[in-house]
Length: 328
Image (cartoon, rainbow, N blue to C red; front, side, top):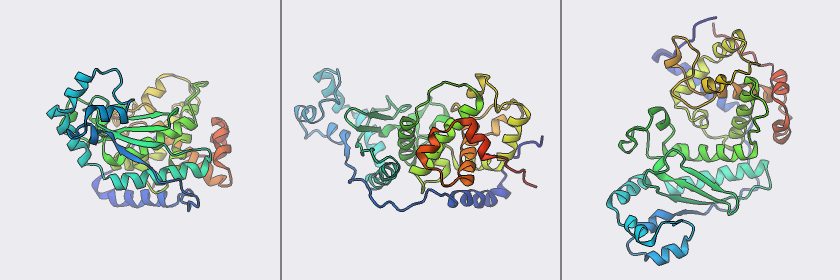
């Protein structure tokens, strides 16, 4: 097996062209004839930290925001200078008009494929860094979507001191919409856990990423994966080598539970147990499952999205005939 190639500066232009070609060939770039109603986006914390808004007025308007916090403690938080500082920094990084337009586009694409979908009401808020690792909350009963803006202040932000750097890579404002899209995709295709074979895990995640393609046709691929551009380029450059490694190591139909931790779970890198591990991109099994599903659609473009999601992993794998070629 050829050793994995690590993208060097001299090949960045080639990788960029290769990446753009793969994205421009997307069959999901369609014209939306019936967009959803205008998305309502509300910044809860703007009013929360506004001293001119009485506490009673705020709690009456957002009765579910206070939870079980006593009014006295709730009032203290509203004037806490550190909390206010964090909120102001976080909201300064958000272009509300662009975010609203991006949500409008996302929800319109979801509704195009799943007509029963109804756009949620979107609330921005600041948790004062308490929820940065799980900044997206969706309540299906009310159809409310909550976005903690302190979870998207930019990687290497001083406020994130102590948080793993690999996790910070997807904590930028441009990660908000892809993360929300993925959440809805996972709701549409919930993981059943019926099979632990590696091919099932890869194709399940490939289905999620296919929904990402359908819901976000104009979004760069690396953002859909929670990758940096460099991580995506590495995966793309080594696509054939990665697959060959899986085949030669008899992993494709393997059921070792450690494969999920090595190649599916988020982390700083994938675990091939070779010298290239530290330079590899994480979640490479997700990337491979995505490419398998893309190859399936190249072979069977007439397949409806709903029918595709119902198909089994082995059927998709066999009909995809996925065999990426090594570069000369």
